[in-house]
Length: 428
Image (cartoon, rainbow, N blue to C red; front, side, top):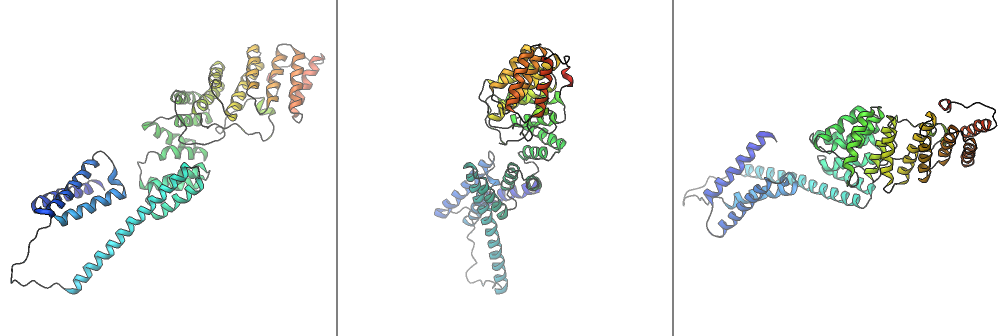
């Protein structure tokens, strides 16, 4: 209510205490009045250290005590005996009573609707705790209908619509929250995630940067890392993900529990891109293990920067814990990508074989791709028999994959001496 509201409030409080001291009665009524005044003083002191007065129940109780205290400390002035009182106008009296009754009913209805909205919010939170998101959405909508200014209900509706993938609805709920409470900090984290999925990377970056001014969480820095990765700003991505990894130690489940595809625009090296089965899904990022997710993303950024040893270091660190199926798939993919790079450049070939073995131990969804890479490593080591054996394993695992079949023909011609050694830079 601003400075004017503060001035009016302080004027009312000061006036009450002055009036109470001046007109405090003796006896039982005086003790009741003194108790009411003490209660008001207690509420005021408590409000110096809490925000209870912002809620409907405590505020209503405060003003109820305020009114009772005024009534209990009223003066007992009476008219002198024999002096006739001026009769009040019946119509005026009835009009005043009618206005008071109507205002009281409207005020009571307004408070009742707020209480009912709070009840629906409580029910919605209970449904969320039990995992019933559909019922929770229904309760939060009822709360918003009862009290369109319930910031908590509007905010939770936006969050749930983000998790359900209804991004336009979520954006509308968040807009309503911003209009009612521009300084509501939690909204920036969710809006950043929303804008990221709508493809507005600049807007998402802006929202998450606002979040970092007041707090830094694994999720926030991981999302900034994803945003910079999508824009191929690898140095900035590495900086954010390093911070996420640092914070991830001992950090519980993310505030936003989602399961999404890698950042838009992420490059997937050959042979994954060239030989993966059509429709194979990319591994998800955000599971419950935030530390592993941040380290896997950081390993991916190091791979893009061609800092392969740093990438391997992060992947080996991740392997020390328990991985989900999707996390293991992504780790296996990165091991395979680094091994393929070594094979293509004809360097660290023994290291490449070791990485292929690590990738296979993680039970990837497409092991034929790792066998394909390992075949080319043996090819570069001039061990053509092993190269042919590995490629045949890949063909048996994915007989429908025409690219792997072509690779087998290339190696078989090399075994027979029918072709010169080829440059792997030309291999798809």
